[in-house]
Image 1 (cartoon, rainbow, N blue to C red):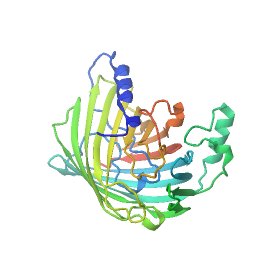
Image 2 (cartoon, rainbow, N blue to C red):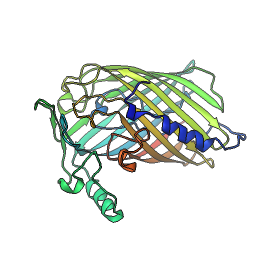
Image 3 (cartoon, helix red, strand yellow):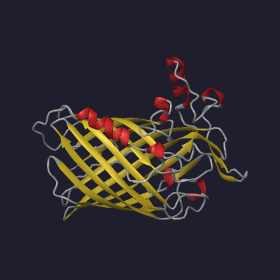
Image 4 (cartoon, one colour):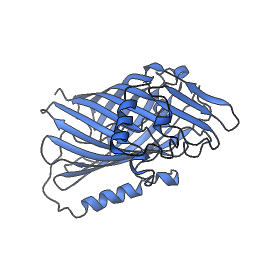
Length: 351
């Protein structure tokens, strides 16, 4: 996968390998409700195009179904120094997503994802500011040199002005359907307790409103290779790598024609009910603004927890950060992306 040099995910992979290397391999079995948190960097422009959500490599059997409800709270603050273009992204998104999975037989699964998207001033600004003041953490990293305290709280501003002074994007609040994704997933090898590999082919349908920048106004298509590997009884590794061809965005001049995506995750499941996951996802930029920082690849780190209530239902929550978590010194671990994101979800298997 070809990406901006600062978005190299090799450091994250090395950290994971060093972490699991000394572990002894013991008897293991496939873990139900296992896998990465289904959240890929939800920066405003990324949400307009096809995104392969992080996922395991196993496929439902014929006739089986599963349902997933997820709420994402996404706080954006990206106001870099106006070198070249001027970029002001200061808002919050609430995203409510419903995903349906259905086993079709012949090691193939159908997935349909849709939902609602709301861009506004949000609820997190005051909480984040209080946290920074309480802990003494700086709030003036390179993504916002003037710092959070310099800007009004709870505003909704999405603006890009190119180096020639032309306004490319100028949006406030917005509410409506998000883009819809239809996916076929097919096992590439026979799944076992130790490993699995699958191919996803997806089409993104333009159900979001392009005038409000809740959608691109066009169809995207792409593919992803997904892998799972159990390292001992309590550790499972996951990886996704793929890309998409992006249709022309009707209200976003300068949008890319394609995007590359990748994800690595390590999951620790010490018992039959609890799952802890650390994952890093990366994607090449989908919009060239002319601002060097804003045009870097998007990379976010997510820390997630899943609790299995019974054989049919599991609940999960996660917290995601951009490069602020380490003052942009480890771009392969987290880089440009939402300032902070929280996700809460439920996965139900009726059969």
